[in-house]
Amino acid sequence: MDYDNLVNLLLDNGVLPFPIIRQGIRSQLRSRIAEIASTSLSSAYATKMKYIDLLRTRPIAIETTKANDQHYEVGTGVLQACLGRRMKYSCCLYYDEQGRALPGIDDAVGILGGVGNAVVGEGVKSIEDRISVAEDAMMENYVEKAGLRDGMRIFDLGCGWGSLSLYLAERFPGAKVTAFSNSRTQKVFIDSEAGKKGLKNLEVVTGDIATWEVPVDRQGVYDRVVSVEMFEHMKNYSKLLAKVAALLKPKGQAFVHMFAHKDMPYDFESGWMTEHFFTGGTMPSLDLMAYFQEDLNLKRQWYVNGKNYARTCEDWLSKMNASKEQIWPHLEETYGKDKTRMWFYRWQVFYAACAELFAYGGGETWGVGLYLFEKPELSKR
Image 1 (cartoon, rainbow, N blue to C red):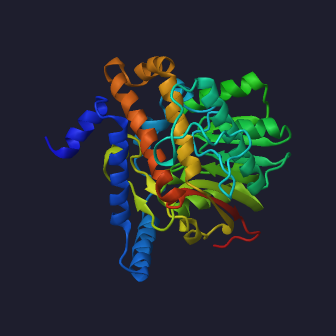
Image 2: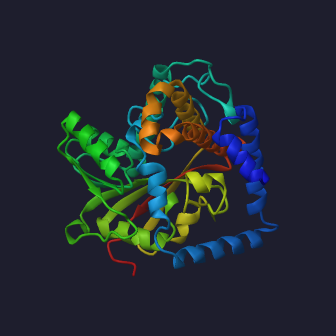
């Protein structure tokens, strides 16, 4: 048995102590940094442009079935045992732009790994309260930066478990919100939550954006398209953004949230993360969207320090560990009883790996890019 297979076997059986696992993750991150490093700026740009040219030749997305199975058809109860009350399965906001903890966020607790120390035995409610504050803070950040207002028609592309769609439908009762998901599990959950809240201004549409063609009755009718952590599953951003443009009215705007490396885009091609959680995935660079403006104009861009995502993942991990009895039957239902323990350990490692990634370099190496595009009055093509 080779070294990698041995490590995977030990991880799947929960044998390795977490401090050792985290040291291994940090070693892998250093290897990744060395792998994507260039000897000169000219070499770096040549590598980046070669990758961008490659993206233009690809389909909108690859390995969509595997990616869906890995995250979006997972039993809802699995994620409910980890996420905040709004079920936001993406980076939440804990700190302001100066790195100060936001009101309602205790900066002394709930942190692990590369950014601090956890409170041993912290209860589920305490963890959930903190995540929920950070969920709302990030979604209010979207409202401000995307200029979302009551009365708008809004399309949430890749809506996940509906955290933003439900938030917007509730906050703006005069808006009409369309949530677009490729998951039947997510649609059932969102429809149920909308029913509980009595929301009549939210519809859920299912489809695969890679093959979905914008229907005539949806062309040019939306004031805003918002997309949170979906672009990382995509490849051909030219074709993807053409579909976004087709949805928007002239002068309508698209707001995108995606995680990114500060300099260099790359594919997830092999390794533990690729195999179990991110098959077909992309790590964009922060400037990647600037190269795909055939149909939309990039108006503004912001950076959210990676420590926000690191803390999000640490809180998800802490809540999962504190909710072991709750999550167990849902893991059994999703993966089968014979694989439940293995997948519990895998989700632990997944959250820890993501936390370490975004904490690396003080959150200035990997983080979150926010982008505001606008559709011109006249087509650019």
